[in-house]
Image (cartoon, rainbow, N blue to C red):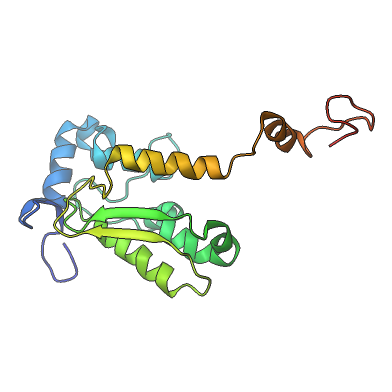
Length: 197
């Protein structure tokens, strides 16, 4: 249930109609899960619990919420926060912000079927308010759904290739020297690195 007492939706259509609630989704995962538990079904919530959750003494993922009652385990919520990119950026922005300046490029459909646009709005709000400018590119596609890409895959791959090439050393020997520098001790007369790196 959400804060207003209604079922929390899990997925919607592009027109905004609810496809199914979280309760329905998890109930279905409980049916498929070993022992009637969603965390052992290999589907969405089971996978997320396995990846993001802490482990119990028997090595199983500790459930984010009880499979039958729905009671949330707040200690697991706290554990999952280490994977929240917005929180990580906010906590470390003075250090990491300058390194990421102009390097954050996100896009999301404003009608994302799984409501992922809400999280991107929270990140966008943080980046706009951050004391150090991010120069982030965050695009919202009105009426667009899950997996929307404003440019198309080929154009995005070309832009990524251009960006990678702009940061690449200009020659193979420069790349080798850059890699070796500070990693290996060399004698001052080393013929490979012309006197040490």
